[in-house]
Amino acid sequence: MKRLSLIWLLLPAALLLAAFIVMPTFDLIRASIFDPEFTLKHFQRLVERGVYVDVMWRTVRVSLIVAVICTIVGYPVAMFINLQPKKRQVALLFLILIPMWMSVLIRTFAWIVVLGREGLINDLMIGLGLADGPVQMLYTSGTVITAMVQIMLPIQIITCYSAMTEIDLDLMRAARVLGARRWQALTRVYLPLSYDGTLTGLVIVFMMSMGFFITPALLGGRQDMMIANLIEFQVQHLNWSFAAAIGIVLLVLTVAMILLLRWTGRFAFRRLLNVGR
Image (cartoon, rainbow, N blue to C red; front, top):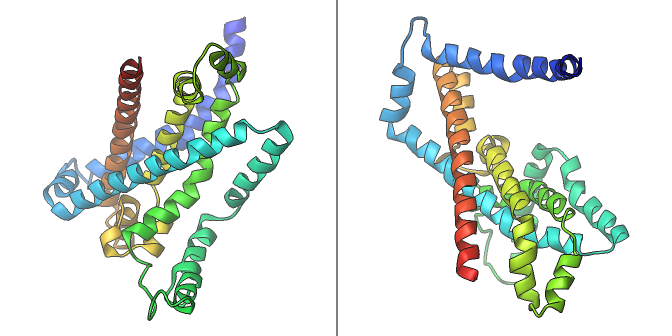
């Protein structure tokens, strides 16, 4: 009876999973290998043409950079929030969540206003005598990465904070009482207990960055095209099967990189702990 009740409880989630994930994925696979007959030419085209390999590599590289920067910046911010009194935590989390209430498109356009040739930063630099004329800051890889970090950073902070709230801070105090220095208590007690949440946040940021479309399209140049922009370009030119093949490659590449990141992260952390002993 309990097993039957559990099945009924899981049925809505299973139906949603099948309708919005499993079936579209199988339809994408079908479109990529039947054109109209069975063929692998679209995948061969992806591998054989260097421009597509460059786009895939660029997507992975940019996503990794964004994920690592968000982790490096987000971890101490989340730790600072977690160590504050409860009322102050609520206020600080509210400030972190405010940007997430705004559209990604609006936040991307805001960077154009700030970094444009007649934007705020250029006007400030010219006014202070730091530049003789407008400096080209838009349509560069650095601008794309900066904007993506700004968009994804709240997600990393919230994920790290959620893991840190489960840590008993009395363990830190006990370590200090037993003679550990503040840095030792942080690296040997706090960091290991919050590591899984931090690694999960890094993986989530990487996964979401792999599918970024608006920010590279508006702030990057032709040399900053990512896989999502390539898919959109192929759809515009009605290359449906090739776009589907790129989508499958994006899915496989993302899953493979997530597994690699989790394995590498856990392995590196264990080695770090062993070295520190």
